[in-house]
Image (tube, rainbow, N blue to C red; front, side):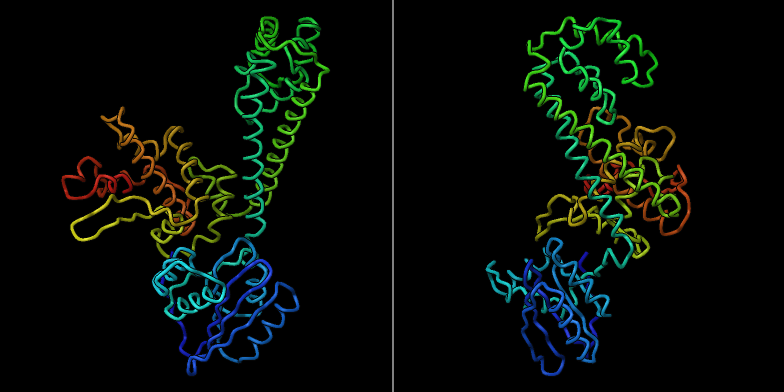
Amino acid sequence: MTKRNSTPPDAVLVAIDMAKHRQEILLERPEGGRRRRMTVMATKADYDRLADELTAIGRPVIVGFEATGNYHRTLAHRLLTAGFELRLISSVALARTREALHNGWDKNDSKDAQEILHMLRIGATQRYVDPLAAGINDLQEMSKTHEAISKAKTQTWYRILTHYLPLYFPEIERFAGNSRSDWFLAMIERFPTPGSIASIGREDFTEQVWPLIGRKVSKARVVNDIYETACASMALPIDEDSTAVKMFRMVIAQARTLIRQRNEIERIAHDALAANRDYQLLRMIPGIGPINALTILAEAGDLRRFGHHRQFLKFCGLDLATRQSGLFRGRTKLSKYGSARLRRTFWMATQVAIRQPNNSFRDKLGRYVAGHADDPDRRRKAMTALTAKMARVVHAVIKTGTEYRPFVERADTRWKDPSLLCREGVPRSLGATL
């Protein structure tokens, strides 16, 4: 979302090439374009000294830098609390500028500082939002930790399904259900092999496994099916006390721990956001649950800072881009120059929304694919369009402070069938994102 920002003519420009242990700084004063180089180590004393020196200048100071992992966060927060204006430099724009200015891709810290200074001078910068100052640091930590734990849990779950169960209890997989249920893991942790079930008999097995399975409509039938499956299993004949089974149980325990941690994060997030009006509005949109709402608020911050929904779409990487030169025109498609986590969140929310009854997303998908149910390309384009629609709805709901209204666009005469757009000179790929 690079844009031109006005730079006061009397402002002192400070370009910082961020790194883990040291920062290269290039300072340019307005009078005569005089420059000064500095090297600041990643210590509190050096950060305080830099802030004091910039304050002593007595003029407006604009600081520009490129985000570098999380190494820029501490210095940026220190300069922000000192009252300086911070500008963020796009990594992609910086790389393209480097190639244009130096006719090559060679880079070093001092050269990067020069390029950052050049982009500050021409105003090709972005607004920097400090998570701690914006009050979303806790939300970001919860969201990112939840994502890390969910990935670890999914890896562990598939390790169980693809390695341990095929060896030691292959037939039990049909009872697994989804990865959010803990009862299946609790059961195979207690009974990891068919022999551990068959050896104790039907009555003892039923008595021990009954409280583990939880609330089921046909619990007795499920228990009986599991016992019959264990008696007819083709699993490897290993002893329950073997080292292999101990490793199996260790992995199961890890998966159950990750599930408990994930559930705890979801509970903390809901408690922290239950009274938040933006969170309440997001939860009313089909497909957006507690974690999707948390991710949107953590990644985007205050959505009201986006004056138009197109700005938010560009922030998410859901804006359209076309490569064109002379008579050549490439396909119009998503730029994907934005937050990948937001795109993934809106995509998953859309997948849930189209499976729920009585909402505009499901209704719009039906209009898109009507008569083309067997065309996967058309459905893919329709899902892309619905993902962008989900982002627009989120922006509109938060910006206006109004609750989600299903089917409000039925009276919108601007909608056209994507199959008609090609006849009007609009690319079919563009029609899938309207």
